[in-house]
Length: 429
Image 1 (cartoon, one colour):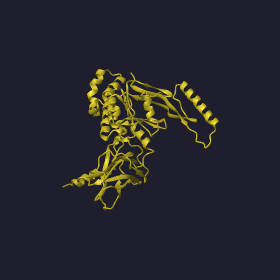
Image 2: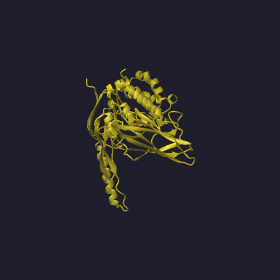
Image 3: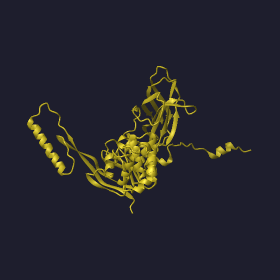
Image 4: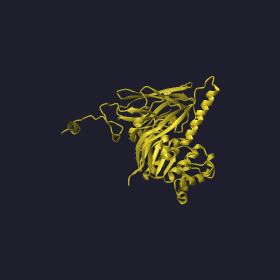
């Protein structure tokens, strides 16, 4: 029996978009009548063809997906990455059988549970308890099978108090917690998860990623869409990279991430605006980082700078950072020296210079913080950014290929004369 559970062949999805003509200062009655007649005829033709009517003076044809082909095997955890508008959500809706493709076909073997957007698959008038049983029935499970998983679902979602409340009164976070718990615990063969997890808090996202790992270890298949590249790199072994509706790459996640970040990694010397970046950790908020900059040269020296605002008077401030691999594993950390701050200062600009010539070729991300204290004494963190900046490491042009299995550091050997060393250490008597 084949291990392929999803096979897409030449998938395409076309949408028709209507555009209104630019308003004119004067429009004759005959033009209004003619325009209305054309719109009525077009709507009638759309209904006869079984598609929703498209209104507008002109119609544009847009392909959200075009000639997308790939295979997913049983037990694989596959990431789907790409910029906004690349076609990721459209692809998941086709795989979840929410919408039909315009061209091509997809073959799916097994039950699919999908979590694509807040509210998908839930009836707003039903309670949380009723929706658990409804979703289980949609997945083809018996009432006894759902009952066996019920307590585990409720405990994971942490909505015991509101279990008999209509879900239309849930917050978006509660909605997502319950929806993910249902999708992950009712044992579908294929679990499809979109960016909707970003609605949850940091602790819930961590638990969801752990649950998806458990699902994959159980031999089930996971498709995961996220702009959190660190989560994609940690969770998935392979990935699909979409660009403008076209599948640009399908293969190892590391390579897919490199292609995706090829256009988003910072150029040396450019400031990156991080004022609206998510803050996953609780801090005291006495200062806030607004911009981050990285400058490098051919000798391997990296200069990392941070600037921002001081929101409360501080006696001093220092910057620390950790360089991480795409999978989130740390390579190394640095604690900068504390700089004095006057009572009238409302802004800070800090910089640290390090020797990064030993970094192996590849992509790295930067986690950065500002605060007081260091690793030797109590630290107070004012602001923390995770994965705030991506950059290419590995300035040694003599090394063309580097396997991730070899590690993130290139050690520079210095040859020694072992016999001379031994003679020096143990001179003859």
